[in-house]
Image 1: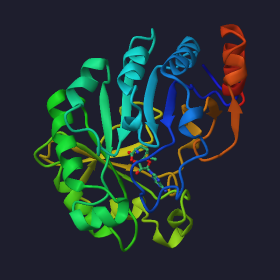
Image 2: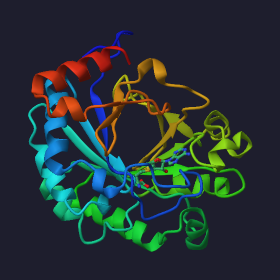
Image 3: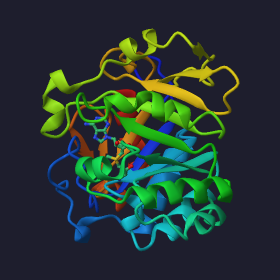
Image 4: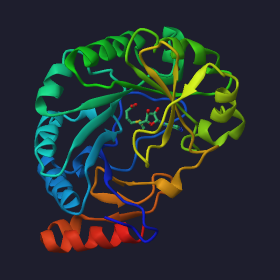
Amino acid sequence: MLDQFGRQIDYLRVSVTERCNLRCTYCRAEEGDCPKERELTADEFTRIVSVFADLGIKKVRLTGGEPLLRKDIMKIIKNISVIEGIRDLSMTTNAQQLNGRARLLRSAGLNRVNISMDSLKPDRFKAMCGGNLDLVLKGIEESMDAGLTPVKINVVLVKGRNDDEVDDFIELTRDRPLDVRFIELMPLGELGQHGSLRVNNAELISARPHLIPLAPRYSSQPSRDYQVEGYLGRVGFISPHSQKFCRSCNRVRLMSDGNLRMCLGDNSELSLLEALYSGEDALKQLIAEAIYNK
Ligand code: SAM
């Protein structure tokens, strides 16, 4: 469906939990304000996503928090993957609990994964995110083997911490069909407030003339994609700061407590819970109005 600016809104991000098992230094310092008891159930997510699908949502991304912390994540995936109209179901994960589960996720109906990995050096990875790099690397391999493809690697660059690894990340695309995407630091956590730590994607691109620009796969794609000649994978740059993509924004975000955010960069929310229990028509009308006013 179209919003008041004529943008086609067809992409829903679903934060299935605000809980997380890592503390990335650039992300929120605290977990969000939705304790486990207030998280929607798998059935509630399914009912809400079905209404979104009726209104024209075609792509759903499960995110968080860390989505794999939900014990019923397989049920959530199974339910959403069979909703009529949903053509693409993906998940963003830190991969700390991915090992041994990629095939199960694929057979539950997940199409692909984005995996966050901010450093290729174990100590540095631990310092930036508090996690185990080995688990992430294994998770990437397992996801590729399971067909959760294309596997996309999300890298948030922070000046002086990991911005010397850009070319090492690009090298990952040499022999494997991986998409490595550099995401500009957004003003989220404490670190994100320091604009001086942000690495400018436009500068990274212009310093690498060997990157060949690729045509966007779809018009609302936030990343600008490149490839090194002869390499199997792709390199994307997501630049909410230096190349804002609000004009082609096609997404809204459902929070784990049933609140809806119309803009990922704005904390204002609308609760869907009351409408959810007033019936499908009430919910549909509320969402349709909210999307129009995005
Ligand atoms: N826990 C999952 C993960 O780590 O992939 C999903 C949630 S995480 C918030 C989703 C994505 O947001 C990750 O790729 C993370 O790197 C990115 N992210 C978090 N804080 C950010 C910031 N300040 N600027 C840019 N990206 C950020």
